[in-house]
Amino acid sequence: MIIDGKKIAATLTQDMTLAVQKMQGRKPHLAFILVGDNSASQTYVRAKKKACVATGITSSLLELPSTIAQDVLLMEIEKRNQDPTIDGILVQLPLPSHISEAAILYAIDPAKDVDGFHPLNVGKMLLGEESGFLPCTPLGIKVLFEKSKISVEGKRVVIVGRSNIVGKPLAAILMQKKPHCNATVTIAHSQSEHLIEICQNADILVAAVGQRHFIKKEMVRPGAVVIDVGIHRLPDKSLTGDVDFAKVAPIASHITPVPGGVGPMTIAMLLQNTLKSCKNQFSLA
Image 1 (cartoon, rainbow, N blue to C red):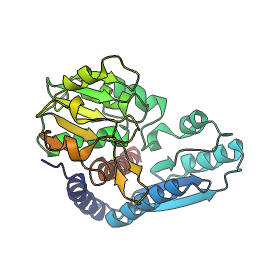
Image 2: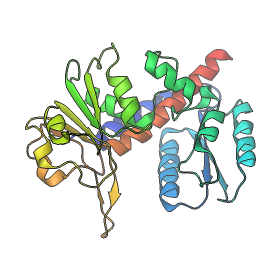
Image 3: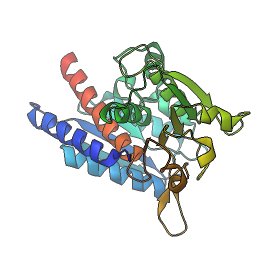
């Protein structure tokens, strides 16, 4: 069965649109900062801004040259930290090599860190606290399981990929002693010994390794759930993922496509975090 992330995200977006319409006073505001002219980053920001428009969330975009000094970028972030009308701040990655990604992410007010990358929010995620923000892609995968009625409790989940954006946080989320979690999680990677056997042991296999068609049919146990986080552009401009979809789909019980699987959920969770941040700001006021 194909897991239609686009359809699930659209339903969530409709719910958020209604929630925003019912809000009194100002609407949630998500501030984007885009450094340089990376075409992929520009595409991602346009998609996120379009989603904001669809839900009634206000957005603003600051475009800066790739030569900008780190101190100047930090000043721009601090302006948005101090602006009470801004609920979320998103600095689109990657950044130019002369800028410390860690310094920039740490500079964002944790209360406005709707990407969920600040160490304070990472710590809250590890502790299972609800007050922080969860990273958007792992959170989107968790919601995909819930909406698709795929139980992860007690299941063997293998995540191929150990990034700070997907692999590590997804493991932290799914192993929590909470509803829709309680999984037995293994993190593997491209250098793991006996990787085929590790993957074959999975009830749920998550591909987040960043290599096109890395997950082959022989790595997937028949009946397993397969989640493909990867996205790669082919010479004909079409998109594909980390999973060899054509050969894996016939044996998987559920599988996400690329595009139309995890990607739309990531954007939906960004909006959800922004709405949560706005509600938090109102409650503090």
